[in-house]
Length: 434
Ligand code: CMX
Image (cartoon, rainbow, N blue to C red; front, side, top):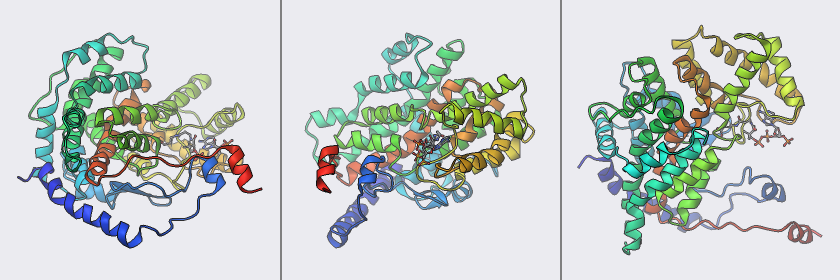
């Protein structure tokens, strides 16, 4: 009683009823036209997905279960007074739509700690990966391997009633979230450090444990940053590549391990989650070519123009839905202003904020010239000594699991069907409008 799962069991019939009413009362109403441009153009603007954990407004940015980032920061329990919220609280909010108490947050920390083990064969698998296998590929590999222990897959094989799908989906999702830091930290230690394995401390929270395993546990600033980082990257409504992919693969009743692994393969793309690694690489290359660690705005402008002239994007800027500065960027900027305002890398990120939007606007084709979440995260991690850019998307992936798996539990609780939109050939479209 009082647990997250018990609360979900209470909420599920209410949500099932809401969905039923939605279908009965409004099922045949139109959400708008689908144009040929939409079919060609990556389905931009087509309202064709159901996603409850968060909603993105193009001007205001993300709201998690109705709460903006400043609201989330104010409402969710924090470890340090006036500090960053616990990601465990975010998980409760994403799963239930309700703001948890400090005791509920603590129950999640304890629950996740109790699930935080990975089988030896997965450790060995990771230990045998070549150092130059990208950390995201290793993460995906490990998740697929962990799938051996999927409770959903076993229950399905044993003939579980479809009304009960959400239960093993929940168990798998909590297990995945609990195991991810172990996998992620092992990858970090193997690829970049001496391969040290730090055991889970049952008495501390998720972020402190993850930081301990990464080797940054003593660094209180880093632990706070990690809490913020893990909260901010959880969810960004349903249409982005990692969220949509997890949902799509899950719709075939692939279990949470397989579904998330698929989503993370999408997150590993440079136009999506990999952009955070690309941003830092881009800045460091600029600094190297100019032989400075604090380029002027004019130098940044020239370097941007070179990037664009060579047919590349400026990583960390632009968005498919957002049309203003990403509030996830703003929140990280506030963190930087509070904790590291004199850091030269932060100053460069700040200077880019002043010049890049004008440059992109001048180009005339970019729909959103403003920075997104990935423009800022790298400089914060660097400040606390996590310098390995190739690793950044793994941390994004750990956080993204919170959002997409919360939704996956609801996908099964609501009995959402296998996804199967209609595709068209170019000839069929041409003939249609002859
Ligand atoms: N630099 C240069 N050109 C850019 C650009 C940028 N940062 N952002 C968009 N453009 C270009 C597009 O490549 C496109 O060019 P073409 O018409 O020649 O193909 C044109 O502007 C119009 O694109 P858009 O409609 O504004 O943007 P999309 O919805 O197609 O793409 C996104 C959105 C994020 C992929 C794109 O802005 C981009 O590539 N940004 C850089 C990579 C990045 O930061 N990705 C992270 C996004 C957040 C996340 O998912 O983590």
